[in-house]
Image 1 (cartoon, rainbow, N blue to C red):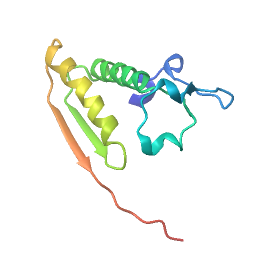
Image 2: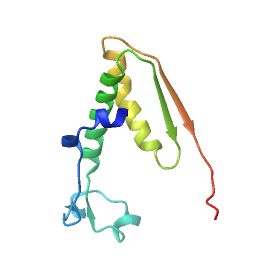
Image 3: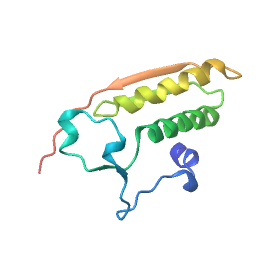
Image 4: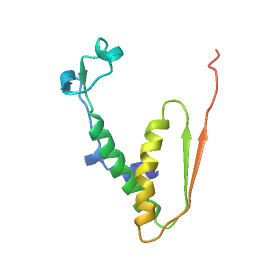
Length: 113
């Protein structure tokens, strides 16, 4: 599986229940979230850094193969967009540029007994 090749154990960020996270006063928070949040566990900068590393790993693993990126739209579009934003310059400035096809699908289903 590609994901297991790209994410070795030492790169996985684990958050334990006993961790206190970051104080919310260290971040700019929208007013409508202030009362609902106590702490942050993963700062946005860390997420962006890991996304950039993931994009680099994808490009290395794919080599000269075409890339087909599929986003299942249910909250994943932001991460998907950020990932593609990191893949694009790596693809353009690498040894060989490969075609990247982007697909977005919204799935609807219901859970019935």
